[in-house]
Amino acid sequence: MTRILRINRDRLWASLTELKQIGAYDDEATGLRGVRRLALTDADAEARRRCVGWMLEAGLEVRIDRIGNVYGTRPGRDRSLPCVLMGSHIDTVATGGAFDGTLGVLGGIEVMRTLNDAGAETLRDIEVGFFTEEEGVRFGTDMLGSAVTAGRIPLDHALKLTDQDGKTVLDELVRIAFDGDAHERRPIPHAYIECHIEQGPILAGAGVDIGIVEGVQSISWQRLIIRGEAAHAGTTPIASRHDAGLVAASVVVMARQMCDSGEFGQLRATVGNFDLGVGQTNVVPHQATLTIDLRSPADDLMTAAEQHLAAYVDELAARHGVDVTWERMAKTAVVLFDPSIQDLLAATAEDLGLPSVRVMSGAGHDAQEIAAICPAAMVFVAGENGGVSHTPREYSSPEACGNGVDVLANAILRLADQA
Ligand code: GLV
Ligand code: MN
Ligand code: MN
Image (cartoon, rainbow, N blue to C red; front, side, top):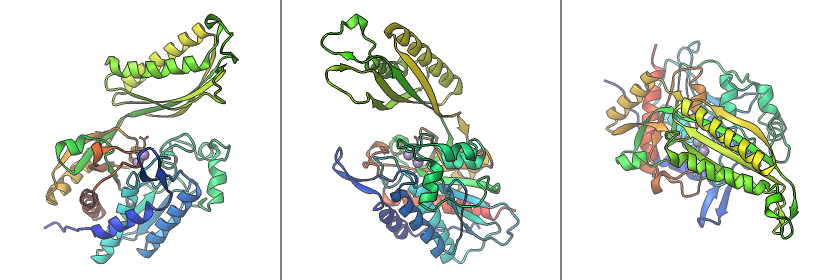
């Protein structure tokens, strides 16, 4: 008979409620209280310290690595065996909610507390971790800490990345005292499971709390810097302008047209950052900077979309006499999760009496990086309000969160007793 654990839902909810106070801000657009906890800021540092405190209270051995990832370990009977790892992130976007990433980390800590309450011994060590700069909002590259751990991004490169004010990742790690000394290429785990809110409408639409995640789609982030020429708005003939703003706006419209055309499958394109510099009413803009976020569940269609956009921008640049520079911020291919871990999650959900569906993830996650070093998969938790995320409207109920973390706890327990 398989042993079934139930986490303490009130304690999980209390931790989520406590952590969302750190970095809380009043969001004017929604009238709600949101969370702004960009990576390696003072708010992130405070949240990190709170999580480390919770890990220590749960009796975990805490270590910090050279990219600032933090791990808490609950020893197993045979410490020579690879551990099972849970994790996610506690940094947020600037308009974030209380659940994105945080559920996986606080859920993992709650699993540890539940194991302690049950006096459970496991064969393997169990670890819970949080990874640095998953969002990529501050230093421009998403899944940074987990990508360094998995060896996709070299540590030196990551430490030199800068924010808008020119501060480096290394400066900020040192400033907040999270520049650890553990090696960033961590010991290879036996398996990794990440519990995360879905951030989309599929689970709620299917009327279930639990998603078993099959994989993550491809993500491409580029920055486009367009340089034209400043000129007088009233006197400069339309035909002789080199209008950087017009070119930038045309790119935004083309990105949307590419999605609507159907030519690029289920492409999603977003220009989330659009900057005309000083921005003067009566001056033709001489510079425009924008970011382009492309997502696709098919690598070949992602390549086709990037090429189409690049050719369009070349043509625009020639037509309007502007210079264009592309900067690659991030790029990840489609990642498919380990089928046996997916099956284990599905079987665990069934044993708990929780219906589940299989889904692809629209968002990026640390699990897609850790999947390069060990078998990995994710359990998704349904969200309300259509599953919106990256907004203070993000919300998953205590029941849904509790159900997701119950699946996490029991799947981790099974993996931790595998010989
Ligand atoms: C992570 O939040 C992403 O941008 O998908
Ligand atoms: Mn996330
Ligand atoms: Mn996010």
